[in-house]
Length: 383
Image (cartoon, rainbow, N blue to C red; front, side, top):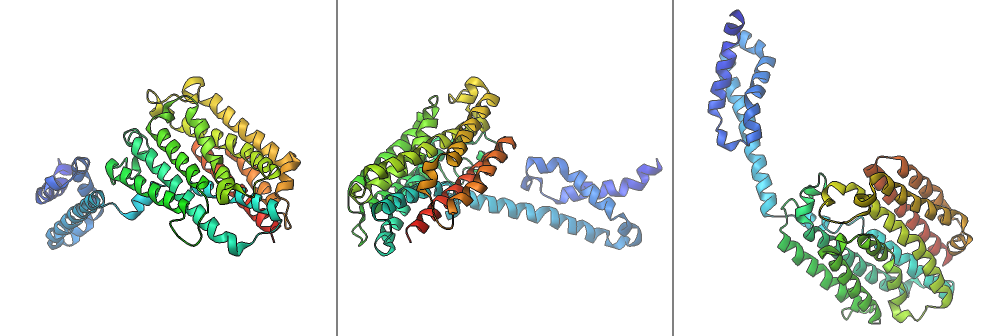
């Protein structure tokens, strides 16, 4: 009884404060915790009530302000974000870091061809073409990523991580997402053609290759990704496709049998590596994909799929370390390729024993390390 009398003022304050706060402004999850939150805060400062009773009413007003205003302002900010997506929301649909791999593959292929052709590199004449072509590839692959987000918006909404993506979360509507994809594609194709600039790419082969790539990306997003293993092989092709673009830049006039063989050797690394990555991504999405897509993990299980994926990665690492052809292609002083292998291969091995999501990220980083080593070694060769 004494305990009830002692805490009756707190109960009265709690009920009074709740009455002062309009419940309609609170989300449903906040209403059920409001009383408990206020009680805890009042108990923490109960010494004020005992020592300064006159401050009790001011304390209620303070709590009312703290509980009420921030909630309203946060909801208003969320509404603004939904109604007015930021540029960053659109940019994020392109996967701006991931698509650097495509540009890296193109640069490796183009540098291999140029070094093979002359043994040196005329940066003054080649750099404008390389920049224009790289930007075109960056935009086209960004369009492909955004297409996938548009097509998978409802599926991504069920995913624990992907539900926060710009289109799945509703910050960007699916309609506006497709408009953005179309805009990126048009700009990319215009850059492929040269758009009347001084650094014209000089042929329609590169333009045709880019257009075919965009069609494949759209096909992937609109249905091909649901077919068993087709999505894996298509993603593998898209990973090495920039090597084809590199051979078509400038009309393919620098291509010879030796250059073609080197590009095939590079594709032999890039294609299976990307297939392995796609298998790992399918394992991450297995719960969401069930009933939606046909993937290897759904057929043979997650454990076996992970073993296959990292088995492929192990074979690629073996080839990079023990096959002399790759050391010949990327020989340089200082040995940039050797350094990238020294760093990148242990990253791949480490990724195989980490939890799936963490290992996937580390494997992705190892690809950037290896690409950086390849590009650096080719530039050093061309000096």
